[in-house]
Structures are given as C-alpha cells and as structure tokens.
Length: 155
Image (cartoon, rainbow, N blue to C red; front, side):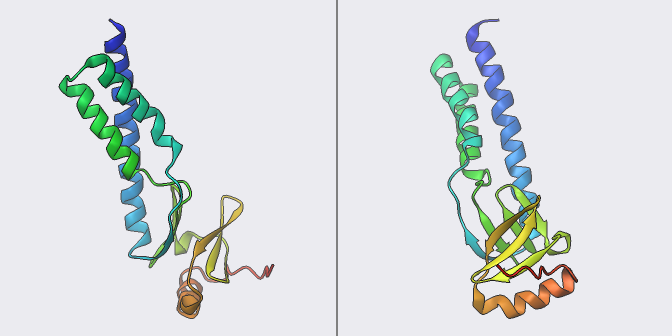
C-alpha cells in the first residue's frame, strides 16, 4: 500500500463519517426544533477543518481521479452542513446550541431575561435569542411543556 492509498482511505473514513454525523445532527435538530423563531449564528466549527484538509491532500496526492474529487466535494458539503458550535436557535418546539438540540419537554430549567431564553444545558446556562415581544406567548408554551421548571434565579 502506497502513501496515496493510505491518505485516500483515511480521508474517506474521516469525511464520510463526519458528513454522516453532520447530516444526522441537522436532521434531528430540524425535527426537534420545529420552525425557527429566532437565531444567532456562530462562527463555523473547526470540527470540519481536518476532513477538509485531508480531502485536499487526497486530491493533491491523487490528482484528478474521481474518488479524491468526490471526497473534496463531500468535505465542502460537510463544511456547510455541520452545525456551528456557536449557533443559538429558538424553534417552535425546542432550542439548539451548537450540536445540542432539546425539545421544550426535555429542558431541565429555564428563564426568560431580556431578549433571551436561558436554558440549563449540561450544567451551564445558555442564552438563546427570544425577542421580548414574544415572551408572554413563549412563557405559556414553556409552562405547558416544561411545567415547574422555570428558574427563580433573577441575576
């Protein structure tokens, strides 16, 4: 086995595995969130950089062969499909922070402050955009779907 074949094999595994994970995360997120209400889009994740670099290396080592080019296009798709780690999205049915999506029913604790819905996610408070004009309606939804979980913490 030569270096090009090994690089192509490693690139194939990295890109295809990462692309599958990104597509599954996006699909799960879309189902759990429902229609988006508000969003703050973060910077692109560095998670997609190593597969992209591996695909470019495969193209450079393998020339214009079909498989390296397919890998390069798959890595580019990964770059655009992967959830951004800094994304904060409020949907009709839940919230998303980066790769993590929660339906309202699964929120452990929440509070509405300013223009944000704050949710306790993995032990840390995360702020998701929630325009203050929508707080009354959102509070009703949260009280119905996550009853008794409103935080009384105020600062």
